Image (cartoon, rainbow, N blue to C red; front, side, top):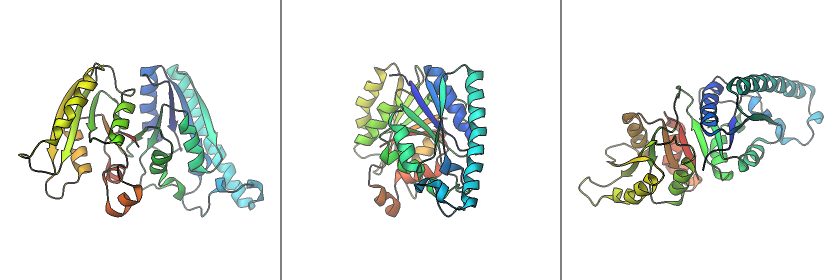
Length: 286
């Protein structure tokens, strides 16, 4: 299945260009419709003590709050104009969506009717409004759609040509793997990696990748299987990112939140660590 309906989330930050470059690349490859999505709450000052979208009547707010809202709308207009210019230059189909309601419900509802949403990793040095700081996690848990998450640093000129799949026999991994098929370039090179905690001489869990490789090969992909064993203080997320760097992967595919989100927040987990430390675009599904 090809991608037909893409959404890219824009907030006027310097990383809009990186997210747009990836979204445009995928839209060109798939002849897809591309929607630029912006939300009022993402454009509010980072230190603003409340979210305008949470109020039923914006005009009942103090005058200074309405001024901030007007400034946000002006910023959104600039982002929209730049986005529409890019669509015209690229000869692509698309439209613009500006949401003024409460952030998480608005973004979730828009994701429901998209094949893929392109979003950005949270940047702790440029945190934005507080409501935006868990946006990726919230969308992952509530939207039921795959997210393509672009790191807050780096440029990504290709996507889906050399892919690393972090594989476990779980629902989340299977979901991410099959969601990723629409993102992969024709005849993409795919490495299916299992990260293990046992000794190298132990019974290889990576035998579970044999059927995955056969399945992907039937899609015309060049597939190889790999296995790595954790040692010392290395975490599964470290192992995935290190391996992605070693093979120059341009996309990492993983299932998100195999454990409960609360457990990952308290005890740590692969999803949380990848969202914090990613160095390569990550396609994640829950």
